[in-house]
Image (cartoon, rainbow, N blue to C red; front, side):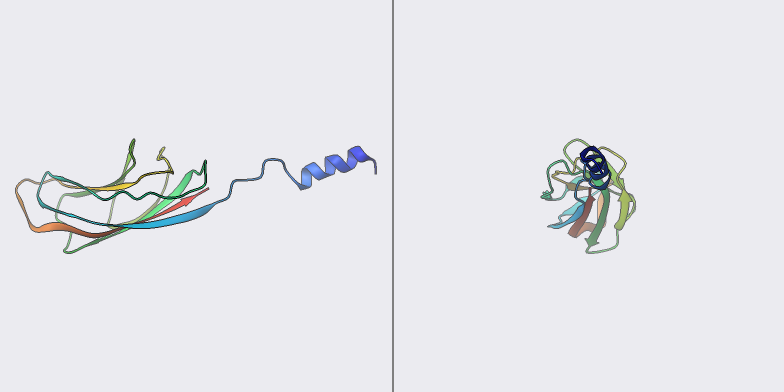
Length: 133
């Protein structure tokens, strides 16, 4: 074989643009409380350490409350520029929006009702897992 044939064959065996590494990151933060409807509760920030240029592929979450969720509870996972509505206290979603992978991430809680909440909304723990590529 000639040198050129060997070089062409090596391009097929060893592509120049290797895919980026994939992985996951998990973090937790303490919660807080809301005793009156219409107020907004934002969690402490979660700051993932991901490789430069990482892009989100899936998020998973688990939220622990002291008591059952009040009617009208809305939960969002937010970055500084965008929020994603979470439909339950735990689950996972394919990321199709432009959430930035670098964070920080915040859980944002609101209750669409007026007046005193009985019992109050008390968030014990927020857990977030990020899958990236």
